[in-house]
Length: 347
Image (cartoon, rainbow, N blue to C red; front, side, top):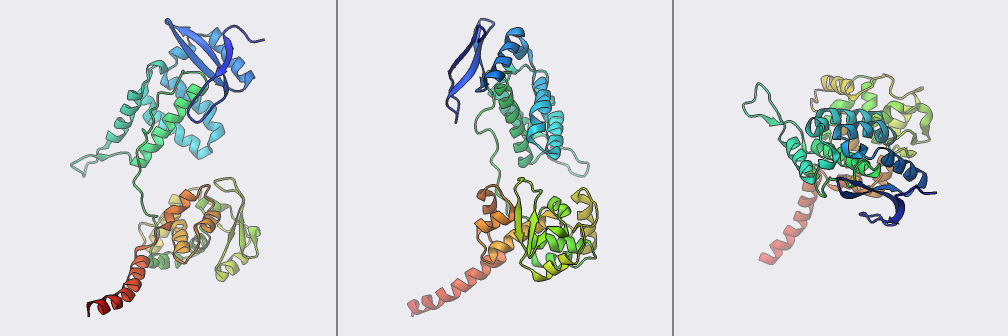
């Protein structure tokens, strides 16, 4: 039996239609509707909480919402690294800005002011006369995305009637070319001492992420195909290796292909930078280099998506922009043929 005040009605939200349980509560002479989703048991529990503590939602602050979001939503939706990042973003930026402001008083203008505040944070350095922006556009986008996720969580759990986060608030990010290694840099890094040289050759020959490299083992090689089980997208991936020399080198290994246990890329990057002289090197450049070379040599984006393990082809399309040297060579080749026709016309 449904308690008084509990009812079922059609509730329309962007992208979703259908029946949704909701509770009508009255606070300060104003009716407010709190939605609970389509699960009856969950909606019944939320209704009882609202009836027994009718002011809990109205007095909840942004800090309280952030703590509930970190304790309930984040652990089941993000990995360990994502959980640490979310907690750091809340502590450094979300909580200092919104503080103890109650959820009912947060508006779209507050969210816009949050973005302006993030974009105007500056990093004061002694050697620079003019302060420089402290946060990149990508970081601002991540922080705003977390704030949007928090407010939507609050709306879904009934802590607020509607998320105040406006549409199209996230900044548009400027497209950047893949950070790849040049041919000279590739020659420099693959020639360093073992075992780092082998790890770089393996990364350049497979396009694996650093974490996938560290988990790869000799037993994962089936013929000339490396089976990658623990991936970022949780999907099993089979990566063909086109270099026979690299396949023979892998077959000579025993156990893990990456013999050292460096938990982060920082130590690995510094070692390679010191031994090769390529100061801008980082291991993820090997993945970008593999993808760019794949496309430049006629590989299809669909095949590259499967090899790299991208969930969407849109992510893979960034590698469709070819290297400048390759484009110049093609332009010269075409111009040579067009030039003969132009000369014939001008005669």
